Amino acid sequence: MSASMSILSGLMWPRTLRSRIFLILLIGLAFAYGLSFSVLYMERYMSAKAVMLGTLENDVATSIAVLDRLPASERGDLLDWLSRGNYRFELGPGLRGVPDSSSKAREIAGKIEAAAGHRFPIRVERIPGEVNRLQAHLTLSDGTPLTIDVTPRGVMPIAAWLPYVFAIQMALLVLCTWFAVRQAIRPLGELAAAADALDPNKDGQALSEAGPSEVAHAARAFNAMRERIAHYLEERVQILAAISHDLQTPITRMRLRADMAEDSPERDKLVHDLAEIQRLVQDGIAYARSAHGSGEKNARIDLASFIDSIAYDYQDTGKAVTVVGLVEGAAFTRPHALRRILSNFIDNALKFAGAAEISVERGADNSVVISVMDRGPGIPDDMLEAAMQPFFRLEQSRNRETGGTGLGLAIAQQLTAKIGGSLRLYNRSGGGLVAEVTIR
Image (cartoon, rainbow, N blue to C red):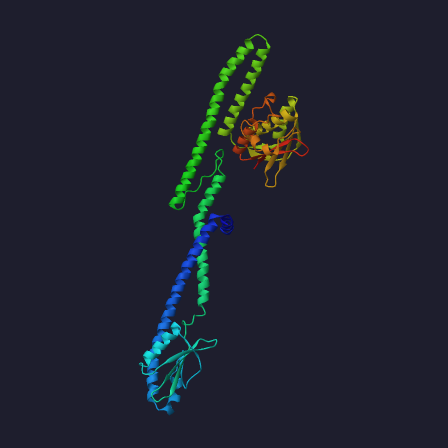
């Protein structure tokens, strides 16, 4: 039972903080406004009731005294003049009713008895019907029966424009509540968006520190956290660069000693291992430099000449690199960084497929999309994103025999972020991998 109630409350209760605060404020204000309206209504009712009973007592006292002193022949002429909006006088026994012991009937009977000075016994009865009517029966001094027909009124009539005013007030209440919630929740939305877009490797815009003191304090704390993360990452990259740089000297000495040693299978293995370590160190330095950034400035390049020059460099060494699609025009970017990105793509394609194809297209938003395609084994779809992480390796296809260190795609991703582009990997239809960089 408790589980079903919790599920029901979860379905009825809004999921967003904005909706919850709006609902709480709206219900609270509407309840307070309704309570205030109810108090005013009751006060109006009690005031009208007091006025009616006070008027009834004073006027009825005067009217009964006048009718009792007039001759019987003259009483009928004054009945309409003595009657009021909520009661009237009738000579005679009146209508047959039923006894009424309600508090209202007792209160009206008490007022009429007080008005008559307790000289005339009074009997109050309720007249059945759609309209709430009471009749007070008494007998004058000469034995003439007199009936007072009373139609009690609850409150004064409500003005016709009052419902419209109430509707306008409720609309203003909803509007003010929505505006207050929007002002309170908007900084949270901006903070969440800034957290989602947080990338210490990119020079993003700091969160605005304007607004109330609490919001400004949260924004300052977030900006300080962002700077600390960027500083920690920079220190990590600097440590990696320093270690990689310092390792080059002992590796070079070990390489010289190995070259001076006598030829043997152990010597060949040692030279091979040192070459692999040296490649790893060089890639580590390249990754550190790509993450830390460089002083290269943007320049305008001719796309056709730039792509052809990269392909010719590989073709001159006997590598199967071809250009299958080329777009004429220019691009404004960092040439050395873009060359390194495409070289890493091409190197991967040559390692795992033996050939690479380069395609250049112009995007709908005037961006330039450069794709390097191969017909190799590709990468499982669930590992495409992880493949761009540093030192990630697919042991089944990309092992140490291929010379890979797991930093090529990570370096490409870092450089792509530095030039303000985007990188995407996806498996090619018919087999193979496509590495795509978009320059905006």
